[in-house]
Image (cartoon, rainbow, N blue to C red; front, side):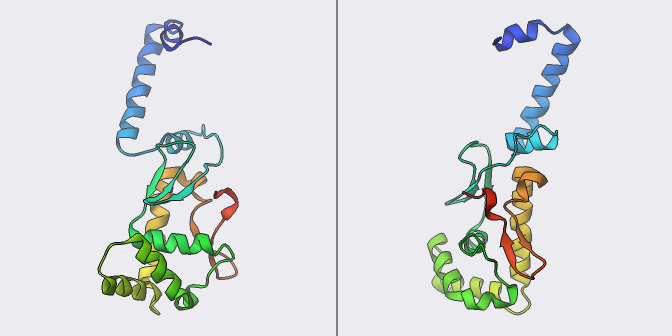
Length: 172
């Protein structure tokens, strides 16, 4: 296999300039926080499904350190709940998971215990505004990090049966 400088020598000057422009564009995308996988997905060169794992800050890829989805403590709490319940959860039954949510949140956050309860109360309230807001934020962060195609495997979706769940087929 040819090394990088030998490979560049086979290109003419215009092609070498194009390669330099591509490298500059890639560096710009990386500096704005896009992972290599997200860039590959955007240009149609993805290697296939991205493997993700839960980590203390959210989600990360054990195969590509540049792929990270940072979630705040309440987002991680909600995401961890859905990972723990692959069968799905009905949003109106979130109260039945209150103790589990509170336990997960306590392990994710160093906030004042009364503030923790307030945050979990807000997730479970009848209007479900905080629930939907956090689901949307999680989705946006995943799509931003992985791209829409790879991200779809890790997003919490409301399915036809009315239950919210994550497609766990690629989750490790």
